[in-house]
Image (tube, rainbow, N blue to C red; front, side, top):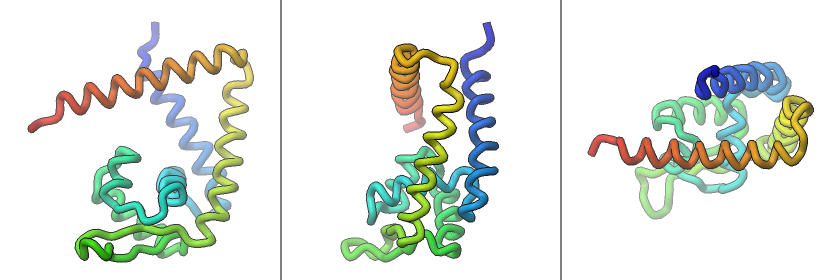
Length: 145
């Protein structure tokens, strides 16, 4: 039996290649959708919370936000409560892009799941969500103090 993680990693890599190709038309890289969707879902999110939510380290978040800001997708403001903290907001350009991002992601999901019966899709998603939860719990438990 092939390794679960190897299979998941291969699917993730193919998905990244798809996003890279499709998001290029929006002026985005393959991972920028994670940032934009989170920021549009929660305008005013902090860089630290964003990093935690999308499982990316803070320095990578800062670099990618700089790219998105330069391209006009987001703007950052200092928090009125803590001047050291930056809050991130989407621009109209980001809000428009997220509609297309959702369409592209849905098209990909539909395509890759086309051969899996609907009832099995639901069970697959439930199983993957359980694996995700277990992964998060295991990692948190094993983090150095």
